Length: 224
Image (cartoon, rainbow, N blue to C red; front, side, top):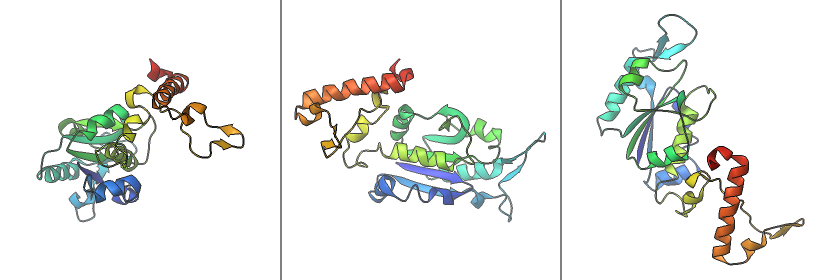
């Protein structure tokens, strides 16, 4: 998979993409991520990529010209399956969307800033708008990092145990069951006996029951 990210502050994405699972995914060649500074396509020598909004009001708006030129140039290599704008008023990101996007080959993520981007870019170029929650951040860089992490870990070969992603919370509309590790008895707090039984069927059934119980208690909206 190849993901391009266009940002006013590309430095904010250096750390999230350079460690842990995302680092290994990139080193294995399973995930290619390129971060592009929008100012490369600035409208003047001062690096301008934003301007005052028509009609007045507080806050600057990211201009059409830099964004369109960036998208057009990056699309020359190959068309994007999705051009995604990270914005608070987009559809709420969830595991289902992560699963869908992990099946794509090329994605372009546009990180919003200021009061957002010129509406004409949204109308003519953006294919999907995504929010990571009902709150406002300083820009779209952190949401972009969230998307890359959530999508990248689903790619075959990225995780050491490829089945582990299948049992994450929110897969099959269930939260993950409780997990335990050694010691079996810590300060009198004991691991459930079934997990020590060595019986795969009993363990599977217990985990499913616990997932149902946890989902019902903590996320009844998912339990239906």
